[in-house]
Image (tube, rainbow, N blue to C red; front, side):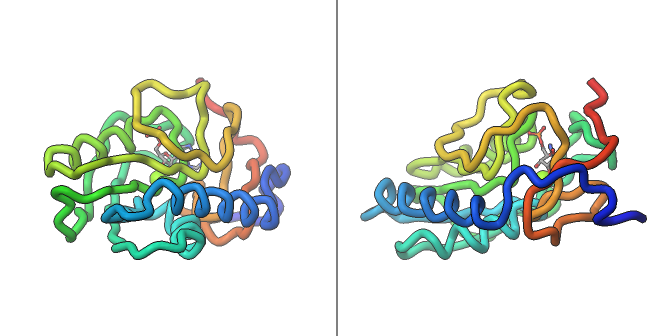
Length: 181
Ligand code: IMP
Ligand code: MG
């Protein structure tokens, strides 16, 4: 499979991502001071962002992970999402912040929000590195957004195309992977 030659252009470089992550960290610190913060990172796509974001939040916290798989290897979200790894910590009465790579249709995030809400957290909010407002189909409690993007398929900094490109340090648009809609 081709690799760097498949990159069309870099949308957000390392410096910009770092700057924005530090801002989000400061904002989250201000909002969660004195609370019982549990950060739930959604695998696999949010693993890079979460590593940087959690270290930018200067507060005590517990970190945990959930993995959600939506089937299909293309660039469109399928309706079928499956929880393949559940959170292990008890979230009841705690302040849960879900960390996502991207909110596109919102279906994946909404699935996890519903799944966690029934366990009765005190608060439940979402921080997404990227948000595609044009594609959103369901509401999610999206409190923090790194960057908004148009209807373009992006890879890098944790995000993949067919499982690849997660290790690219920047966020880039792929060549010839136009949206099928
Ligand atoms: P949603 O359920 O449509 O909001 O999107 C769910 C998942 O689709 C995200 O967590 C990503 O893993 C993937 N996804 C959506 N848009 C992109 C993209 O532009 N690049 C890489 N993955 C994407
Ligand atoms: Mg994902």
